[in-house]
Image (cartoon, rainbow, N blue to C red):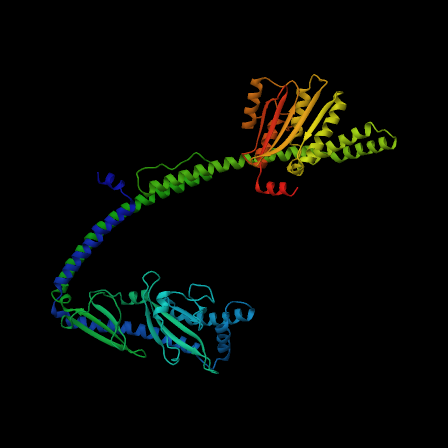
Length: 577
């Protein structure tokens, strides 16, 4: 029952519950027992221990102050002419406008990084600001030459630029970005005594928190020479002196006082016996916590292992494998998202495979259409020249139409203008008239502004071919093909109508269904350039909004309508025709 109840709550709440029951509760018990058990017979040992702690912390702070002093003195060293030259250049620069600025910035930044190596464990800030409070070097997380606009920093950093002898200390409290205790040194030009820059070295609050995070119930505080409390490991009002064991030491060079105060009530009693009881208590609780942590770890580790095995199985080619989903916790949500990701990957793979197959077919068609075409073109051109030279004005134009048609087939992979495509249709009808021995009238209605509209080459020819072969199969005397182009609602509409024998309603509905679903059928030619191929080329070239539809003609025959959405590039092209 407990396991079922736990599976209904989130993993985060489980950890919270275990923390409350197994960490805070023993901590409260141990604290209470310790508070009741401290006796006066250990006060001397506590005082000695406090003195040792103060000496250790004082040594660390002294070393840190020495490092800060050395860094500040080094940068304000007026004997280093190269350093002073770099500071002069950067104090008046606003950007990396030339290589000289970048060179001086690199020198200053390199020196600051070298000086920061000895204080890496403190994670201090070291940066230089010019008189306009613009960053010129250091590890401050903002662009070089940008102005420091931190309101908390600007308000606290009240630096006296007349004092270039000693370090000036101030505290910046910022709960969001982190609090720092800064040392500032004013750097002046030794030649004209002008303010070149101000060096800021910041000690993070986290460093003091770590340094002051000593075990026990003592209060460790740091005071400046005026007696103002700078830092403390305990918040709240100052304790009464009579109830505390007080030890203090002075940090050289800065005059800070480090004070360690331990409440007398915490160091009384039979500490050995009571701490033994507390140790057993904590050990028991931690044993339970360990067992419970193992259960939580297993509940997290097992789904992760399943997910890894599922991913390996999927990579090996089993695309149907999925991760089982149980419960309502975060791991269940993760498993659901993981399965959805696999479904999305399957769809993408199928889409890519389909597009690659279509591309392969189109490339094969293009290759087949280019097999030895130049020999035929050269041969036909030679025949045309001989016909012209012999004065044959009847067959030479027909030969020219055949050459133009063959050349279009060779360049089928290149786009063509609407005017070029209409000229190709006229050439095709001339060739078919010679072949079929009957006349076909070709009427054309294309506005001048649409003549240059680019479309795939040979896009319209299969429609006219379908009309000649099927619509005019009985060779009527008044055979006619009409082409009209217009723009309606940002859609280019090209209508090709014939007055042939047409088709039944059933055949027309079947054809439109195949055109919409890109299914090859009896209306597609053997070479794949039929009506279904036109619909497919429209979709590939202009997106899902393009389509090819068929309907009955006004009196007889069929009308094939191509609808092409005008994209931004096509609109621009259409305006500049």
